Length: 212
Image (cartoon, rainbow, N blue to C red):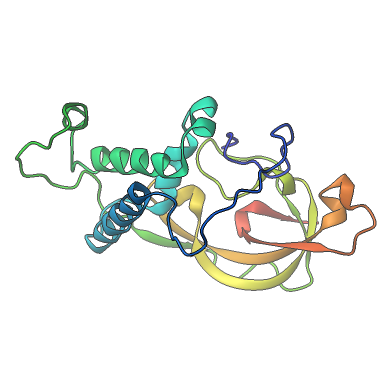
């Protein structure tokens, strides 16, 4: 889905400030370290218990934020929202518990079953050196197909193998597709790179590509 989070090549945001930070500090503020720790523990627990949770669904939650809110919120504030949404979706907590600021004493069962793994296609359609074109169309949910490569020509650099397709994983479906490293000439992506010999390597799933 095309939302404000896909900022690659987007203009109008002004220069990036050169912020001086203490490189010895892992987190700029203590509360951000706590959010990171809670997120890692909850993700590990959900994966260990084989729930319906997937990282791509978590990303999809954040991508559905209204643009003004997405741009205004701190990175770790979005993580808090993602964890709250996950807790409600998985049956761990109710919205009323968050609004009340306290948890109810109750038993719970996870709201989603673990996804069933499937593999689409046993052999790669493409091999190193094959010319490909990135598709232009995109689904209504999560995707890892960035906007600035759609419709652009590239060459298969290498074959990674079957990996979970993020577009389906965001729906709780674990479908694996052949994945490739695709080399795009920078001159074909950005007008400012005309005449450049540089290239950009991007991991791309089979369904994102068509033969050139």
